[in-house]
Image (cartoon, rainbow, N blue to C red; front, side, top):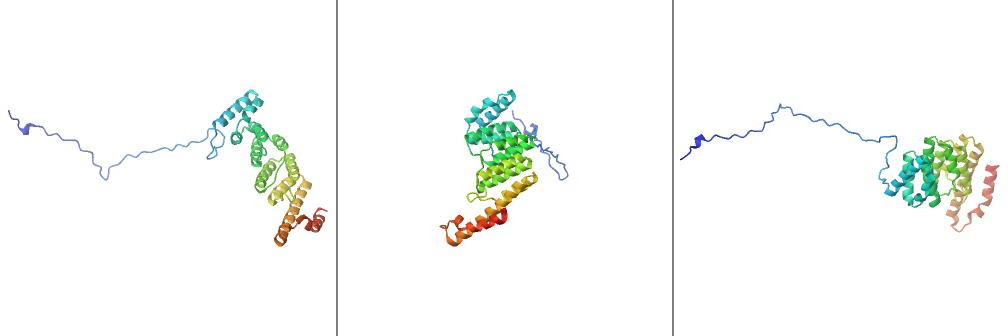
Length: 259
């Protein structure tokens, strides 16, 4: 039996809605989310990653500080590398745990001397920021000495600015004494003009007029010796004994500036 095709219903598929020029497309609004610290601690420095040993040491130090057994955490600290100890100190300073930072600094000082003066300056700034100014005098008093050099003079100037900013007269005088003991202003350690200016102004502001005058005179004397020695070297060569050659000139300068 044949079936006529006229009886088969036609299937029509639904057409997608056409977008006219006047059609309104719903807009999607995105709200911005800002992430930040949940307390007053500063952000981590870019590129700094704490090792697992450093993180465990920080956690154990905090627990020991809460329980009053901080001295028992020294042996584990001595097993850390210098880089880890430095990272622990800076992280504790970032979190304003100054007492713990000074505790770790004592381990650094005994295991890896001498320390960079920039680290001392960071600790002094943190102590002053948290109102622990008397700890600054104790910290500077425990320093064994200061060595000179171009790069070290930059760190020394930073430490002096930190101490002067905290207005610690005892620490400022102690730093000047260590500089003199290390040969500051002599032929082996030329007195940097910027260091002398910062130290002289700070001592004068703290009431040490006599020491401030000594700093300024030492810097002028050191600059004079360096200038004459350089001129003599350019004229006569490196075989000239500069101190003997300039004995009369130095005596005249000292007589004119120190009497």
